[in-house]
Length: 113
Length: 114
Image (cartoon, rainbow over all chains, first blue to last red; front, side):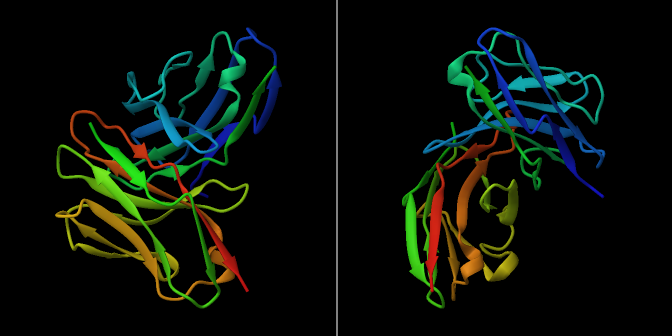
């Protein structure tokens, strides 16, 4: 089944403890991206990647890192999480770029205490 | 820079009546425009997209949207609401040029009453 998977789905952590949220797609898509969703703000793009080893900042990249070492994986790294990073996070992928249909993962709900 | 404004945070309709969700956009280039739907506790799903072909775009579940360049609008409509349409709807813009960013609106929650 074609899909985007994220792990974990739920995570509660404490300030400053490094964490990684994984994202994987099995559709051989080139474009992958991360978003955070907050009430009243919609989804905001954190980072995106056009292909392996090619990443770029979205609108809210501060406090996040990403890497794209393999085409199928695009992990989101929070080196030192803070409470203002408590949010619902979505990973998405598309065939070639931002003008293609985006396929979204199920979301990761992160709480930073 | 590109941006999207969804003019209503909430829209309430009765089942069987028309739906109108309003979206205005700003883009320096010829934009690609999308509507995505998010049902409660679910991920997002594409409803329809405009990518410089026909200005009237038909999507899934009876939804359609019209691209109006002169009004910089991309409103979403459906002739007759169904209870299952209750969800949050996001208008999205991308200019697809060197910066491959996607910009989402803040969302419109559609409430459908019996």
